[in-house]
Image (cartoon, rainbow, N blue to C red; front, side):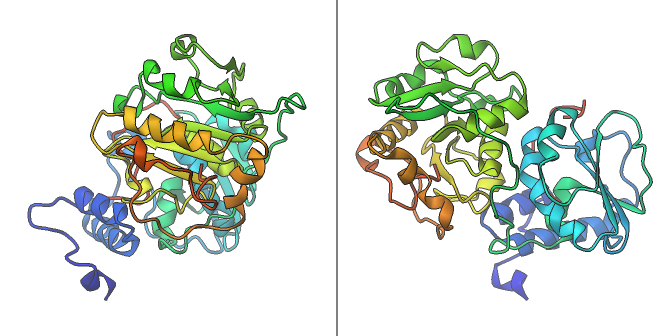
Length: 365
């Protein structure tokens, strides 16, 4: 059995969530699903209604095939953007599929395949009939996704790009450096971005929202105040550079080259020891070597940007969209001297109201 081949399912004194995270970070999805299955079988028969929505188990094991399925989107905006890729797989066997999603995402989700009906998420009960329901992030568990079988056909969201002035002769780069308040370790201090301003032949478009947008001393403010127009702006850029936030998932879902800067203890979805992502073929990962140290990461990004300057940056940046790169070995940026020009195929890899979550886990215990 695959669990025996991968070592113990759970270590001594390890709780199910810790075991699940360990397996997912190492790409051992099958073992993680076994942990989830045990939790489902031996856990409470009904979810605790006092828990925040995103911590409740929704799927009760009922097959989705041939039934009217309600997909609930109880996690964050980025989680919804990442996992809507599974909806066509559900629709392929379900009789009908309704998606109950965050209102701010509905214009984007209307461009996704497989959805029969979209309803705005609210704090009450869904106003639709269904035979069985599932939370969106439970779908990888329900469908027993493997690392090699992640649906990664991009783009799976579609918008028209905002055109840029012709003949500018620069690499157009969108920039976001702060994530949500619930995990400040993901965010960069604005001052840490200074080396990027010194890279020649780059035009920065500031996609960051909030007070941080006024702190930076370079770049063109984007002016995008909603997610649909943010998506259109991204589609018109050569590259998006962002921390681990909703924007990384949006760029990846649109097929835009995106470079994602990760803190030392990165989320499970980015796995371990990789500079690419099986979820997004056009994404490249830049990882902290030591917790809290962003300077070497930014130095790596600046060096990689310098290698992508004109005359033909878009062709170089988008090359990785044509094929998926196999898993990388070492991926961390330690010192600028290790940050040479990226390989040709790596260059482009460039909520409802509830208590802020600590983790988003698809079908986790």
